[in-house]
Image (cartoon, rainbow, N blue to C red):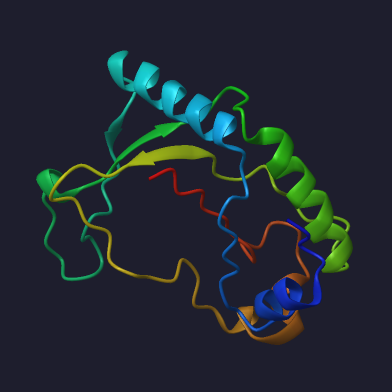
Length: 145
């Protein structure tokens, strides 16, 4: 989980994904799944509204993923906090904000979310994409499947 490793850093700087299977311990994955089940049972998941919107103009809540915005700490937060500190150091971005969007996303049978880029601005090219602390320069996803 060394974000500062040459391979991981090299991939990030080239705008590529860094994949690290086993990044979370099995106990943390189980705790996250339990948290998701509890939130789901409490009715805390809603359709995201972005299943196909903007891709082909068609939207169906039947094809949408469900999301629950996190307002509490999760079993993964200590690892994510360490990842953020590593990114600040490795990318020379001491003001990088890692407190942006935090949510669980559950995909039901038939749901889809097409491959997409959240930002396509010219600023994302080269070093200019890293300057402001609020830029979504780095995103991370934890797949619990």
